[in-house]
Image (tube, rainbow, N blue to C red; front, top):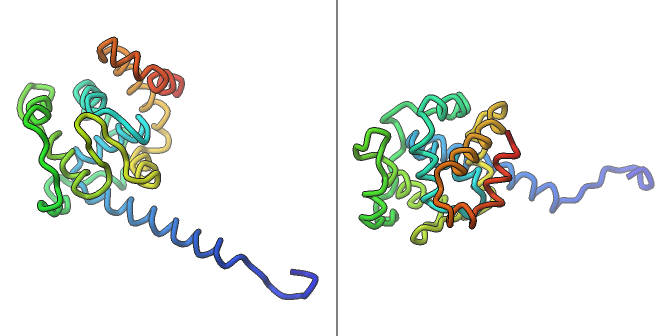
Amino acid sequence: NFGVMKWTWDEDAVNSKIVTENVASVLVNKMNRLQEETQRMLMVASCLGATFRLSAVMEVMKNISRVEMRDSMRASMISVSGTAATMGNSSASLLSSDLSNACTDHDGSDSSYASSVEEFEGEGLCEVDDEECHFMHDQIQSAAFELISPDQRDSFRGRIGRILLQSLPSEELEASLFEVVSLLNCA
């Protein structure tokens, strides 16, 4: 402040900035400890919005190759298989057997999709209510989006849009039309 010739600042603004940066850092570190499959699902979910349908995430996961997913991940975010942090199993919700049966890999074998959903729900990142999910906070969605390499974000979102356009049933596509068009516009 030149009028009184001393430094002045907004202490609340400074403190809120520090907290925001710390929260983002904690979330990115937390996500970096998750299983790689869980990170991939969170990447896809972050592109679908704050609220998303599990069926849409599963459809993308079934139709996008592991190579495409790995190429889209930030190099610093790729976990080594088997080194993911163990989640508290008492806090993880059990999913219905229908969801577990619906989660199959490209070759039709059992997959880690259901355990990934349990993991991100158990870690408090997303809340799952039947088929509908939502990120617990917008910072969590932003941190999940940060898992995607910056130079791959637009093409990754465009790829998700194309997959959803081709594979969603017409009634689900109609309900998600604006989201799908938004994803397609990124490409």
